[in-house]
Length: 136
Image 1: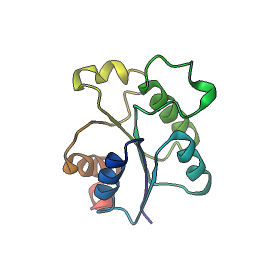
Image 2: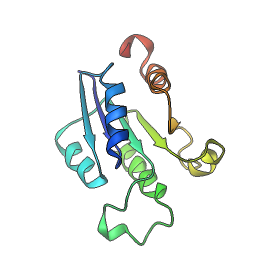
Image 3: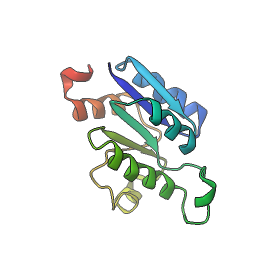
Image 4: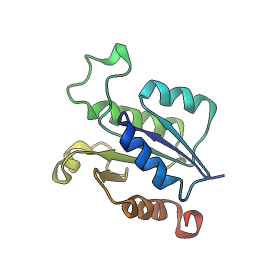
């Protein structure tokens, strides 16, 4: 079964991305916060995770550890990579494309989509990650 998890605090973005993923995935889950995502990850494994970098400081104890909100998303992606090393992760961000190398300097191997993006951009990225026949 092809499963996907979308993590984004914006409901419109979650709906749009989950709608795109539902074209190629049998089961799409959504989480609006890190806290909710980790609860879901305790009960379900995913074939792909699409995570926003600009997340609110959902984990109370961490609120003072980050200067920029994208650092929360970067931390989550690093932790997901450790726990699910075989699960592809895609980062989404409203960061300007020319700032992406600086933002993603510690995770240059993570595919990143700049919001807003066309549905085909996400579908093409899935094809690259999973092989054309695996997704479409």
